[in-house]
Image 1: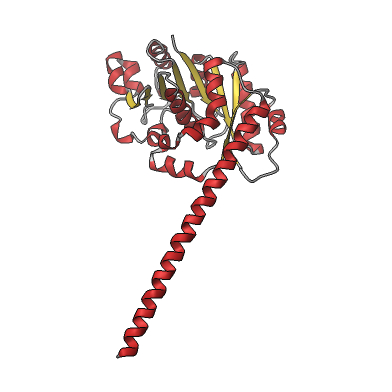
Image 2: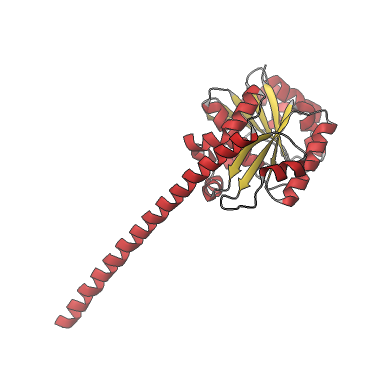
Length: 289
């Protein structure tokens, strides 16, 4: 019997979809069978991040209304990794929420983990998802407005008797000295950190292109390792170990950026030399005439 885990936030735009996709990929790489569910009915976007928007024919609404559509609605993403899209035309207020919950629970027999990318806010959608899940990953930015909304989402989880959750700090600046992990936890009134994911422009590029899973390399999986362990074992790493993992990845990230900059400078230097040679050749031809 698989486990259903919600990926939630109080505020939109903090990276729930990115975290859901990357965590699912990391779990599948570890040999677990994973289903990613887009829980944002009417505003789905997980299909875009996964690069399968053109492959969606049926969705979770079809499968919940008629279980014979279930296999057709589920899209294979990679080995051990599948995707169940939300309906783009129907909202949570329009669907049979009991039927959806029955569908997801039935799929627990097939998968080790079902990750639901929940809608932002505290409406009917998040209430239905919290009725389904056993644990939550609360995603937030290291910004005061996001932290305050994250704290409210934790309260909503507790109101639904979900007290097992971990915090995923996403898009953490790599050059800021003002980020204090313990200050952020105090604002959230939370104890356990699932991950600190650094801000990386490559994530934006790969997400926009629908190739985010290509970014889940060995190094990026190291950043997600604390979150993977939380999902698999139920235990969070010590705060300082999560911070140490983050610092190590940032160090490698900066080296990669320096290397990329050097390559760009070398390329620019070669172009300048070629242009200079062309100018000399043209000047020589003009002097002949």
